[in-house]
Image (cartoon, rainbow, N blue to C red; front, side, top):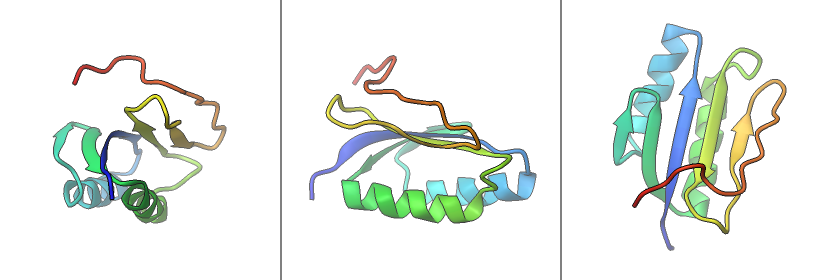
Length: 94
């Protein structure tokens, strides 16, 4: 099970949901800066985390993005009108 670097970012309008998402991400994360988390996850772990987070957010009001920091993987986004289509990260030093 190979782990790769992942960035997870969110914008959540409700304080209660934001705290729930923060706690969930803290249990998986290596490092964070406000609402942006950097994790080392396998593909299976990322899918599981993404499913857990989708249960906590309001998909009509909140935004959640998972971006692989690897040119071979594309980003996933949950928004009401998802138009995010990153193929490679805009900036990554690592």
